[in-house]
Amino acid sequence: MKKILLIAVNSQFIHSNPAVYSLKSFFESNFDKGDVDIVIKEFTVNDVYGNTVYEIAKERPDAVAFSLYIWNTDVVKKLVADIKRILPNAVTVMGGPEVLHELSPLSDFARQLDYILEGEGELSFSELINSGKIFEKQAATAVICPERALSPKEIPFIYTDENISLFKNRIVYYESSRGCPFSCAYCLSGGDRLPVRFIPLEKVYDHIDFFVSHGVSLVKFVDRTFNCNPERAKSIIKKIASLPESAATCFHFEVGADLFDSELISLIKSLKRGRIQIEAGIQSLNEKTLECSARKCNNKRLFENLRQLSESGNVNIHTDLIAGLPLEDLSSFKNSFNGVYSLNSHQLQLGFLKRLAGAPLCESEEKYGIVYSENAPYEVISTSSLCYTDVIELKRVEAMLERYYNSGGFKTSLEMLIKCFPSPYDLYLSLADFCEQRGALFTSVSRRKAYDLIFEFSACYFDEKERNSFAVSLLFDYFSADKSEIAPESLRFILKEAKPFKNSDCDLFAIPLPHGYTGYGIREFGNVRYLFDYSKRDSVTGLFNVIARS
Image (cartoon, rainbow, N blue to C red; front, side, top):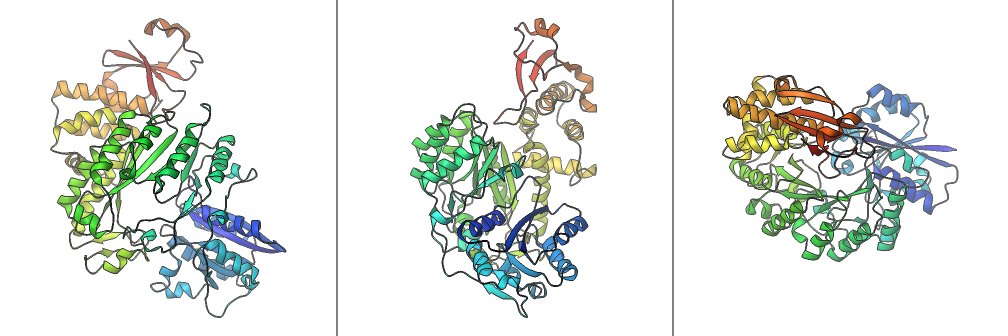
């Protein structure tokens, strides 16, 4: 029996690599396995490197196939070099979005490979196995490129009754379509000339039922724009709406929010709270920037649609911005940031342009003066509109945005604090200055320390009475996000009590004993006694809810 290892190196444990599962599934579903044993091994970039090498080497594979992305390039380069020394007779194969684009700058790396897989990996991988060459060392790197693309019916469903348990406590990625009809210049899909292929709806419905029946908590559709076909999107949402109330699965979609019509909005509003999440890539509000990026978007309609969904309160909304796009200077990006911030989405990701070799924007780097790091993940350093100092300022703002906004644990206190500043951007920049002075900007801090820092920060803007009110707001946020009975040190002066809920406490809230009250907690501060439900987090906000006050 010949053994082929499919190696995935993910950015975090919670992530999985659907590509390697798809390669294995397609081959085993369509061809006789013969004497070939395909084994998947998943690691993360944060694993102890030596342990990763050992786990690969102990399998004694005849061929090792790596999946290459911008986030794992450095680790995979090291793995290839070491595995070739440890297992000199093993054939090395490479596939993934970064493969061909790494050949020119990393020619020494490319020469270590026996095979490179182009095109849709399921076809090139199967072709390599069926040819029998996958176990033959090559004097020069060979490229395997299929002559066709997969049809919609051929796109594999990678999950089975046997393997679904491997994805417990991880995001389950699901592909209901492949390709994108849009040509955004900064995206790899922008250079993809293949048509969008949709898996038949009947299959999608069966797959949704599979996830629900196996109690999968989060299914993330990897469709580039879920609602590029509006009628199809409505059909899938209707299917999700028909699921039993008891179904525990949440579905995540990347959407073009400007493409929503009133019917789709109504369907989403009718869903069970927390049944879906949507991620809307806005990227910029600068019309010239969007035009240069070949991104067609009606931002006015996008804002109207997202505000409607936000007001419904039953959907978690994630919005995205990209810093470093053509013609967007610091002033323009501030406007984009403040505009998108006004949507009050549950998360606002401030991302930075990365060089995705093969994306159309690569051909315009000189035109727009875009300079990228030569090291993975090839992030923007400067542009003709945004100097390196500007980029660093945005990095500092991003750090505070992640700590205080995207963590979700400072909602009411941020609403209070932001009134002291000309704009949201100014708040986060001032927070960055403050934390940097205390050596706490880019370093990791505990949750309690984050509350201590922002309370200390507030002394610059609030008088004593206002600071006491702010302390109350911070404590409410803290206990909404954390079930601990130990408050941040700086806020303990205003905390009167924090303890578990007992039968004898029912009279305090003038309510009957809650059914299954285990996990509830009493917190008293600011002359108010709160009863928090710590048995579960809210399915939309991720916070613990207050069920009574006295």
